[in-house]
Length: 290
Image 1: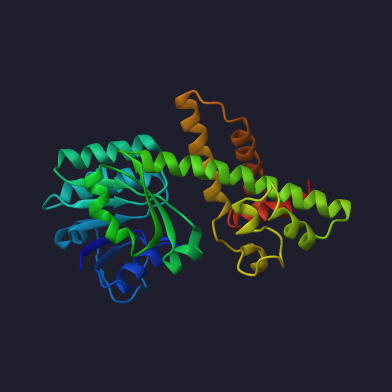
Image 2 (image 1 turned 60 degrees about the vertical axis):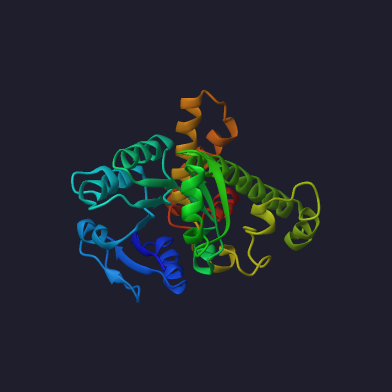
């Protein structure tokens, strides 16, 4: 089994690390907050974490954190005693992902950007979807480790392509969730029973993941955050972060994303109204009040 360092034990990273332990890997972990995960070695800092591992997995909030952890004066690359393989799972901007790839290559190491889709439920169940950017050789090397945390592992292309796929996926997700919410709200206002609409729409041309797997209406799908007062799940502020990443990417690529821009504005308003820590599907209640 592999010797793995894991950085970032939050809502997503914690269960991902736990699944690596269950798979028999030897984990050394580090987080800025106290770690409660059993069966691991807890490092006091990045320098301690990097000393005796062959792989590093990181799950961090934003690009600034990734740059600090990897490229900072006291970061991983400044303190690594040897060339190792890095699996960067955060959802960040493409520029940062490519900068980390380049810096690791200069040190003789191997890197993939491997953001995830599926939320906390999939992280706990070990059924995440990974979108991986890196060489064919790097993808083949890290795939067995990713398979301990996920069910579907896709090679998106070379360095940065994992982030590109994640940004585009969440652009689509943010737009589609708002569409599903608006459709249910309109149906309710017209007198249509939500269950009847769900049963029809899941078999009709409007069906999508936001409807069939993550329905935002309580009482339809028992496992969704809608039945838990919209506890995340996937927090609205994280959806807003991803839509901002998509807007920045669209601007840099001169690509038109008018629906994405509108979705970003709506999630900004939802977060500003106090919904930032709710599940992103909770925007249905905010839309009902408008």
